[in-house]
Image (cartoon, rainbow, N blue to C red; front, side, top):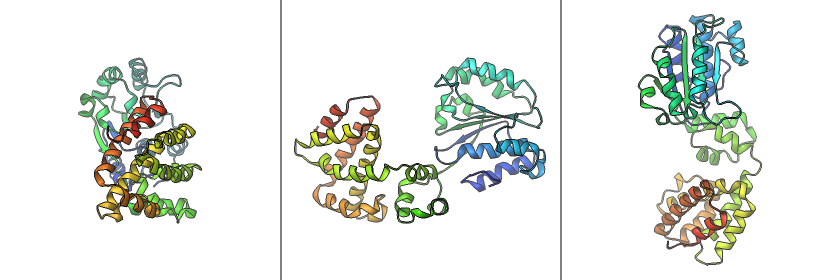
Length: 324
């Protein structure tokens, strides 16, 4: 759309129309999962706001539009933490306030895109609140976040929330088929697994190890579910050999367990791993639903333990305690 990859054309048409009509706001929250092209949508909207030809913005041909596409437009500022920082603090926001006070170089608007607003500390949000409340006429703020609840209520009440939902299966199919024509064999699985987030498909297709780990994790699921005490050592060895992929393995196990339970519930059309249905059917016949539900909870707990840097040995032992 206008040379920007966005998956929400109707939503963006409405926002751009507000620019044409002179009805755009000063403050927006763009909320959506990573992989939905929310940053690109923000870039497109910023290009429209700074375009010289307001009635047809973004025209794509004026100097401002050319610079916007190349991310060199001086009136579009990307706000992110400094290279040595993990968050945006109050000191950063006070410096930004000074920049906001400077009028645009060559545009009607000066746009600030916060690439990940969840990185704003509470103090930073409070520090910048007055500028958000009473911005210069030319200033527009776009806060990008996966979850708007990460922001203070005082911020939420002053911004226009624009939610970017996951896209339809039809859009996913078209996106994958056009960008990755060689992926037709995996297409049904990819559509299911990516759950309407095109960026997930990009990550999977460009990850050479994805299918290898996905297949091996299914084989090891037999050991995870086994009541044999020796299975704990098999699982531990597998996780040790794949330390850097442990989180993905837990995600795979949860998806497989979900699919097995769905097969037991006579809902095979809802499973994600449709290319593994024969193996899943074997497991569905071997274990009852209550046991599988309990193991799903244990895998979730194991995944949380990993996030807290618990050793893989301890996690493996935890998984082996089937009755705990």
